[in-house]
Length: 323
Ligand SMILES: Cc1cc2nc3c(=O)[nH]c(=O)nc-3n(C[C@H](O)[C@H](O)[C@H](O)COP(=O)(O)O)c2cc1C
Image (cartoon, rainbow, N blue to C red; front, side, top):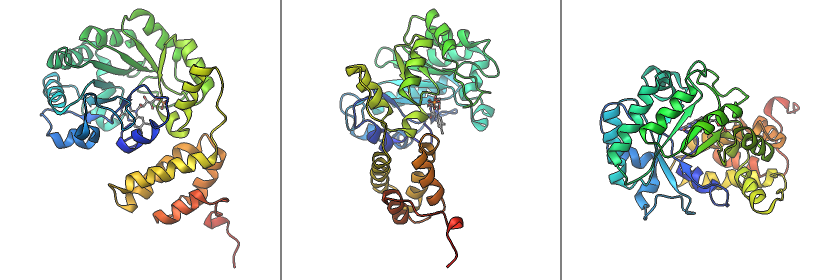
């Protein structure tokens, strides 16, 4: 997830069993072949790639490209392959206005022929060397072309399709239409993965039931609850439910995250990233919400870390009694 899930986050989230694979933030392709440093920035795992690109815990990492120009996508796919990518994903889901205005992400869903051309260009560029997959939404403004776009991705050579169950215009507003993902799954012969609004184990069950998909992709849910993927995996293996995630384990994840980020970034940036993750947690956890309220104006990393680990959060400044 762009600006949110980087290599350090992938590392942390895959330390417990749960994820089968992960995807990088998208590499934006315009009209030229990008230099290696751009790929390494989005996917530092390339620098230590063994046989298969993966997180330190061994969970495969797929490199994602976002673009619309088939020749440029092909050139960058070859570049990625040369640098050690072991699978490539194409993003047709990004709803950002800037990206769509420049003819990228979900804007291609207005014309399935363009989806097919983009996937085919990348597929032809890498041949059978590595798999190519794609990610779509249900459409741009409406769902009329949902199936046509999914089939176009398959015809272009995608070996798997993730479907985010909303149109571009629906943004991230609930609900995700899992039953629509099921309609697509029934018509495709490649594996279809359901994505959107999976925040809990119950959502996972419902998404699987309504879509009929064997696999799901977690987005914001994995940030809101870093134990969601392990909880799903535990249930798959044992039929039992792990206890709810405590604030202490969320705080530990955040502190570990800060330590990893601090190895490459200045304290000020790490402070912002920590607040960003806490913000993702707060919608799903009352204690995270309380901590966010009391800590959101802190600018010093050490003070923020103390506030996360404190037994009781400090009161927000506005709520403090006058001396
Ligand atoms: C801040 C943000 C950045 C994202 N960046 C990417 C990205 O780089 N590539 C991608 O395929 N999806 C990206 N997504 C979309 C998510 O992967 C996912 O498809 C979407 O959030 C729906 O799933 P969710 O409801 O579980 O979050 C992003 C979403 C958000 C909120």
